[in-house]
Image (cartoon, rainbow, N blue to C red; front, side):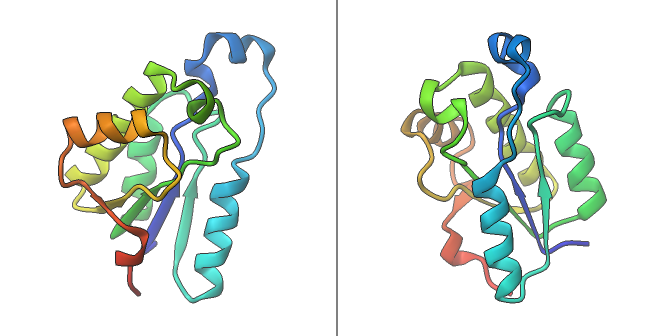
Length: 136
């Protein structure tokens, strides 16, 4: 059981142009955030959506790690923040919903694309808390 599950919602498979290019990259921002949280004593797991087949793999990670908190981290290195792909926003919304259904507090730390944030607040209001709200 991990207290915090960090994830991002960029599923390469859901972006046909990038899937064809097949140039995956590590979620550096998510990994940096995980290390910072570990260094201050938090138990952290990471879900890397990059090569996952779909959102159901996030559901598997929720079941496996049983976190109290989920942080849907925006890497700023990915195409979600640059192009606001509708399908990736849907994936982010599905992940927020799955985490809430699992009883997790969900955090969406800045910088998250304003479009993504607006969609999340419209579909899942009151589902996000600030990173400062996460305590050991």
